[in-house]
Length: 76
Image (cartoon, rainbow, N blue to C red; front, side, top):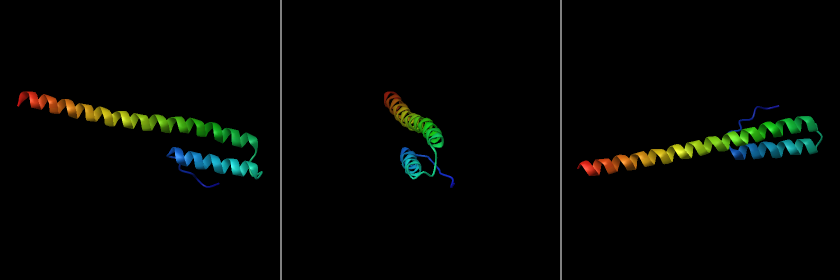
């Protein structure tokens, strides 16, 4: 089995689609399908949380920059 790099939700979606195809073709059993789907679900949540954290960080940075600009204008 080749190593997969699942870094985006699209990667996970393609991985699960491939897994389902392999299950339907009889290449993997239900136990392995369920285990991989479970771990994929956890990974999906982690990716979503990570993306949300990154977006919040960018917003906080913008807010801090705006606050700094307002402070500079007041003192000028």
